[in-house]
Length: 369
Image 1 (cartoon, rainbow, N blue to C red):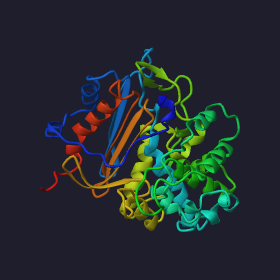
Image 2: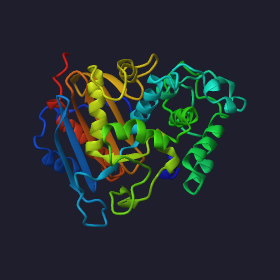
Image 3: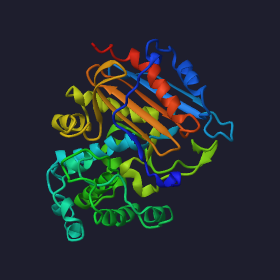
Image 4: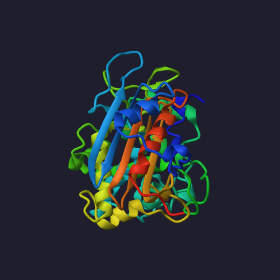
C-alpha cells in the first residue's frame, strides 16, 4: 500500500520506552538532538522542554530539505500528525461548554440528514465515544481508491469530509460501539462535521476562533506546508503531503514548537484548575481514560512512562514522513515535545524516541518498583 494512503495509521497512545539509555540523560538540547540524529538520516529535528508550567528550553537542528542547505529555524512550522487530535477535541469542548454541543447526544440527532443512510449501530454513538475511540468505527475508510480521490478534489474541505463520512457510516463497525477501544481517524472527521452543522462554520474557522486565536497560535495551519518551509521525507528525499487537506481534524495540522507548546501549557494549567480554554470538567474529561481503553479525549493516559512516575498524558503521530511525540506530566507541569521530518527507514522514529529517552529522566522522578 502506498505510504500516502496509510492516512495517519502510525499513531501512538501507550508510549513504552525501556533500556539503559534512560539511566543517564544527555544534557544540553543541541547535544541531545545531535546524538539522536546521528544513527540515521533525519534531515531536521526539534525539541521543546516544559518545566513548572513554562517553556524551559527549545532547540532545533538540521536542514529543512535534504536536497538543500536552508537550516531549520526555531519558528519553523512542523507537521505534528495525530498529536493535534487533542486540539480538535478542545474546539469541540469549547462548544460543549457553551451548550452548543452535547457530549451525550446520539449521532442520529446530531446529523439527522445522515441518519437514514448510516448503519444502525452508529446511530447512538456520542461525541465522547467518537473522540475517545470507542465509536466502533474502523480506523479509516476501507476504500482506499475512494480516499485517494480527495487529493485532487477541488470542493471545499467540509464538502469533502461530508462525502468521506457518508461512505464511512455505511461500512460495518469494527466492534460494537461503546464496548472497546479502537483507534479511529474517521471518528474525528465526524465530530468536526457535527461542529460545523451546529455552528454553520467550517472546522478550519472554528479551530482558529476557538483554539488558535485564544492561545495566540499564529503559526498553526491546516494541511501541507507551503514552499520554503520544512518538508517531510521518505526514501532519502523530500516527499509531498501524505494526507489530503480535508483530513485535518484527524491530525493534519502544522505549527511551530512554541505554538504547540501554548496548547500543551494550557492543558497542564487546566489539570490544576487554571486553564484558559475550557471548564474544569472539560479538562478532566479530556485527561481521564475512558472505560475499556487507554484513551481520554484525545490523550493517552498512563500511570508511568520509561520508569518515571506519572500520571502521564502522551500522544504520538506520524504520516510516515514526519514524527511527533508529546509527553506531559500534569502533576509537575513538566513535559517534552519532539518533532522530526523523516520516515522510519530514514531514522525518524528512532531519533524522536531517542530524544525522549534522554530527557524523560530529568522531567519526572523514578517510579517506585
